[in-house]
Image (cartoon, rainbow, N blue to C red; front, side):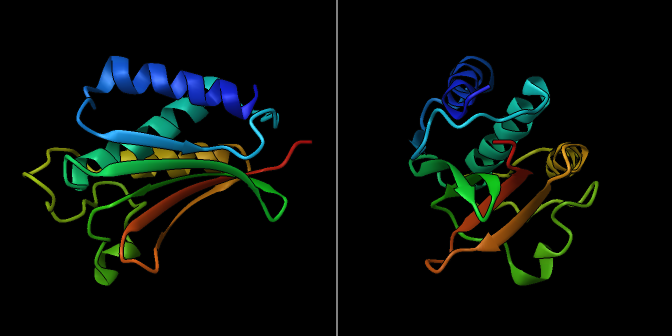
Length: 150
């Protein structure tokens, strides 16, 4: 599938399944025709989980940015929100099962702490990785990288 097709799948899921209707989701895809050789269902679900997670922990009126690019020979799928970033002491366990971030944003958020471990498992099953970093402006960036297939 192409990155543009992945975007279309994600849009259908975001607006049809998650109830994220007060968030603005912005896309940056410099080369939408880049092909991604992957399990379409699992990669779409992992990216949706990253967007859903951003919507839960960022203020409800803030933007969520999804960027799909070629990064150092890999396909990078990243999600950035405008909320507070994860505290440093919580960052190392973000992709561990049953670990949850603090409940910041507009309200307490329910969850079992399995979303990001799912993203990591999907990334690993595609010989990729999932990771987090804090942006220069103090927001969270979650990234899924997959080997570039041409």
